[in-house]
Length: 540
Image (tube, rainbow, N blue to C red; front, side):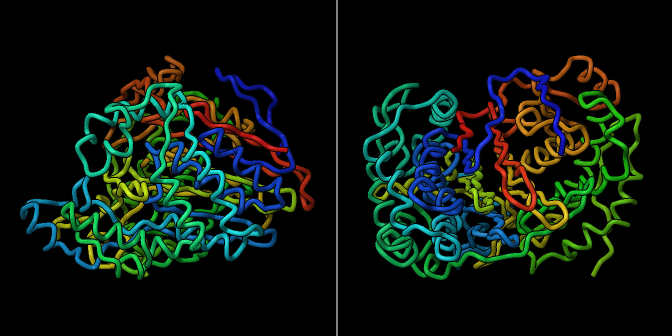
């Protein structure tokens, strides 16, 4: 790919070029990953170390009680890992209706009844055992050191920490863990997390066993029961991450790979499959026509995803049916070039998050994402070991009146999930490991950045820096305040209902990108990190 060397967008960042690289949303995490590679580790070792550090340095987005997904190229082939959590055995529609009333449609957003069994720690262990080079205990040492000695609060994390405090300060363990002076830390203040250091050390020493069947599992079960939850040690002990084959969809002589459902990565593939029927390269990259087509394709994709996607065994249509080329050609015909529309689901032929990426000079590339879902997740933090718990259970339905019955809560079931790592290949060879954080912004970010790179030859940092839009529902979209006012007005003229937003973190996600240079030998990597976070692209 011959990228343009100009970046037309306001940014203080340039692509980084290196033979070994890590890109994360916090500088200390990127440095921890490089430290592992300096010690002889590979990209998997670097990713685990970075992920562990992020649980400490970016608790607004993830924690030791997160879920995780991964796509990795081992030098020969792609592998996918689904480490999303399952519902406790006590969870049924009747369980929630008896506690919250017959009119309830989803589990609560916060509290222990929003927490499924966390999978991130199991993901670290599984990746290390199968692909890592260094001892697992070594990988968590940077995170332990940072939790014990503390770190100075950066700008973006501090802003989100303070914003979340009023809602969450009364939830179990939150103030004890995250309000050390009775308030959120200020920018530049030293935050220490000794409980998390204790938890990380026990996880490191036991290779995760303590988290799922030992002391931490017991502490989590007690904490749940003391605070209105129903989690048992047996729920944790039964959890196992799943190795999966990533889905593939071709676009512009490249192939986009996503983890199959229960995640929403297929939304990006559906939208790109629709856009494959339009000549985007002939349109101005930031013009009205290009942005309109992308928005409408994304709407069509979400209409199907929200109707059909759930845990694979419960879906009434398959991923392959949703990605069928003939079906997507029919969906493409629904787009009107001259007006915005609100789409319903089609009829396929029936048969708060952190993202990081790492790559090494031997060709291993890792696309990894972990999340507590909404800011600080459930808001519940087990205080002995500093386990900040996700609220992924809120993604279930508990009512039989909802359109997507496949996502109805059940014991041991996984909910609809938003976090999605991504990978790009060409001719069976790796091209880019990448991801964009931020709820339903994630497939939208995949779509927008890939169109910029593949249709318009913008380099990964420029594609990352460019202004974004975000589809919400119906005709409603948000756009960044940096978007060209003429483009914004043109979209309004087509009927899009637009809200211009200044808060890029909250609404437009943040990405990390590693683009491989050289085939078949690795010459190096072009690395980008999103300016919407405190992140860093680093390498050597």
